Length: 435
Image (tube, rainbow, N blue to C red; front, side, top):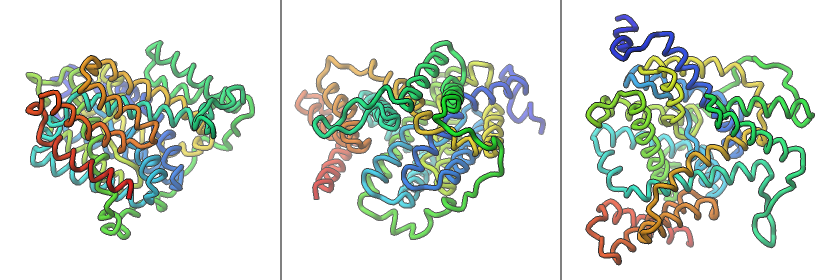
């Protein structure tokens, strides 16, 4: 079967050349994850070289499956937000070993696959009120931005006020400010891959001013994956059946659910692939996402999910799964650029975290702030995530209060039964927290 027939290039009004350019554009738009994910997960004690390889391979695997199975121009990689949950809430916050967190990631992928297989996913997504979905997205955005400010030294610990402004005139902080301004300007100008190019320019500036050591080489052999590959299977059941893992797995599943659903709808609508308001081959696309999460966990990274940056490739003409296949190939090539890990420091990745936080916080505008039964649970979900340094606690607080306020508003019939089930789940969670 020819490439044209397999991907339906003519039918979608595209060519191999257009799909190649789209794949490259998508890769450049999301290549920052190679360094940001490595920086985040290595904070848990994971080997940076192995995480870099796992990130690239998980992205390549997920994008390849999405392109070949679902024929969508949607690329995948370890997701922003959920990697922060993995590293800072689960491992560093709750004290759960990263090996156990990987096991939880794998299980969430298995559950996602089963729910997709039996078409239960839609029921669960429809059961969560839109206002709370928006709040979760915005809250994760603030949490990611806070981590960026913290990693850069812009926000530091203060005994009297808990947090305070760092030494903003110190050279490392100024490097982050430079990176933030440059990245923002590139994005404002509509340059595809603005975050990635901003990181490159920031790294170069750091080398010029002696803040970062120049790499001895740019291309090298691929680092060993041994430190992370398959470690989740050691004492697997002992890891998974820890009581605190129930909420961890649920939160991973929850975030992946809505990231994937939102991205697929947005990108396919932009590409003109939706039919009568419905997503063709939706089951295949969701299955690809679930399999990528399982594969990524085995390799040694947090949840792999569909990337909204795929819209950059669609904007330049990507219309079929061949775009995702080309993106996968670029991630394979990226495996040989691991020496750049020493150049892309926390001060270089911090601007990416802050800008991603800005983009995620855009959902704030859609929350109905004039209705307190929505506004209060949404607000608490949003602010508790960064204040308590825990995505799961923010979700728990908002989802606990939402049905209560709806009942007293006389709108209890509008609350889906799933939300009442989650109410008792989160009551148990807070009881467990104080034990």
